[in-house]
Image (cartoon, rainbow, N blue to C red; front, side, top):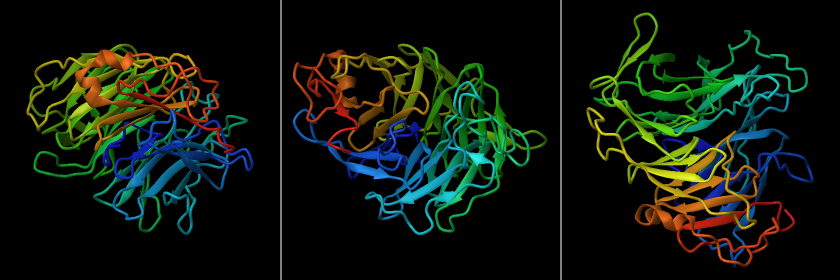
Length: 428
């Protein structure tokens, strides 16, 4: 996964170690009932080899909402957010072997959480965390803590006062005051400040109870700022960002994706904060994809955005500008393909809350987890670009190594798609 942006942070791929860390969101540890994640070797073909290296079990029984990595630490520390179990939100910090640092897990301030049950909101949300390498901190989207049994709001300041963004300092292990903003399932950040980017900012895409908005969060001054662009849609679900060009790709829970150019944008903080686009407004274009665009991640090396349908098997690859531009003038035409039936002969449906999508920028491969939590799919984006029809090639008859899901096919379609079985397996 891109180390500065996050498509949908409930899935982490370390491009150097070629390991995937997959939260088993609704499959807690059978011995303790605590939350856990599985570690997968992405270099092997799971048709014949056990790709599961082991599982990491947290010390508490919460729902994992997001996972990111401190790439500035030689241990490659994992940062895991979780909550929704009645005790507020937590941040676990541990190495890749599951050894927590001193003091972990760190409890979020009273009333803060990263998950709300369906009794309080129709959709999620699941809070996400993204690593900020400039300030050695995590940016975390949070929501009001809600009692999972009574629906009582536990935020001390009142409803909505614990919803927005906080930072978690990886040196002092302390949380910042909150920037109040709409609840978001996924967001992207640009921590770099340059001549064409005067703020460190986050792109907040919110879709709750049928209403949605795209908000730009001024992380430098702690403000939630409005943006007017006619190509922004009413149902934004996920955002990713190419921080080298300031181009954001927003999945809109529809067949349209918005490619938004924030290069040269300025912030007006007189009164309510407003973002003024560089170039001519609207400095964006819409791209049509296969169905309900949900998960999204960007490869900052190829400058391509990977888009995967929510609850469907469509995938798309959108070529973004390779350098910073003043204006996005031409609508991009995505390369489109379809994920084949999984080894158990089920249609592929990507998990939507939280979305689990990532891109390995070193090897140009995309990853996603299905709605049942039974498989993680790997898609070779170079092969998808050159032969998109090959992606939908059905798996050969056979079996996957140790697959617990009663499979009828092998794991590899030999045309750029590999399915990795997820636990429970191998007695884990």
